Length: 237
Image 1 (cartoon, rainbow, N blue to C red):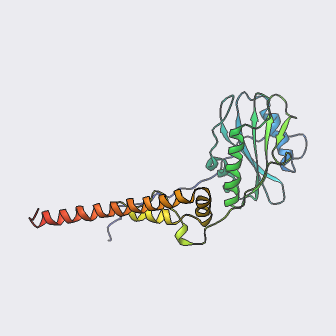
Image 2 (cartoon, rainbow, N blue to C red; image 1 turned 90 degrees about the vertical axis):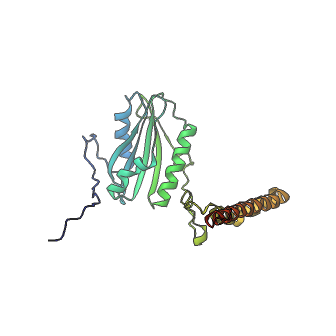
């Protein structure tokens, strides 16, 4: 009988767990209907929470998920955690929401940065973004809509088509730092090169010479050290 294998790779499964639903006196047909229900539930919260409504292709909400709960003045939002339920729900689009217990509906700098980050992530994953709504504390009818204010713009995503432009940062092997640094330098885009040349042509040229000189100098040191090592091995040093 063959000996049992010593090693194993654990297999896991990720599933969503249903929590108590939120009820409404009227049918929840659209994502906006769901926002109305959520606003009631969040109106008495004394801290910020951030969530996502996962929406089917026909516009009907599939579910909602509270992805983060913070303090009275902010919440730590992870893109990975926000979109986890979206991916598992296999939906077409999302609507983000969070509350401001203070009642001030104006988006903060962090709110804007977070929205931009989520828009970029959804763009990469081909997930539509319907809106990001800020709900007021204590008043379920007050809200701020990024879409209605005309500030919700999904960024256009550009992908590399040249294999030499792909950059796996931090993956350089030990002993190949010089070659990696050279390849990183050479992979500047034409736009970056042009921008550098327009802003300070002489400085850009000097920087190129300086970088090249350092790389060549480092390579020379490596070769010298190798030569010394060989000499010692032969008993000549």
